[in-house]
Image 1 (cartoon, rainbow, N blue to C red):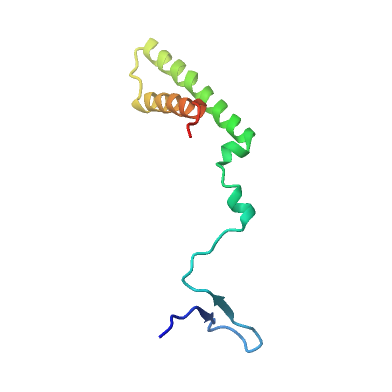
Image 2: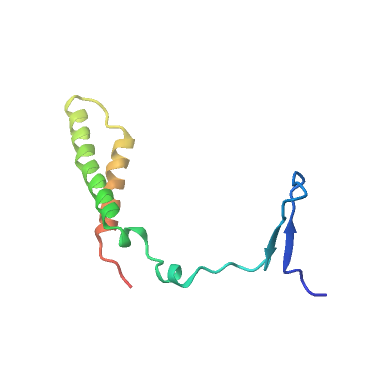
Length: 103
């Protein structure tokens, strides 16, 4: 017995003059058009402005965390771990974004 390759979607609220939706090739993986498949680059490679904005935002957060930590230490207060984590994550993210890509 052959597998069903299409089916009809019907809504119980459909009126008699509406046509049901016929789904063809059920179960097959849809493929992208050729022009879309050729342009499968990450957004930061195709859109330079978003890349620059992200790098600048992360770069500004590094000295902000550092200044905040120094200020808290100078006033004999404990530096929150979240401040240390934000600074460390920002440094790692900037290093990852600015490092040369291999392959």
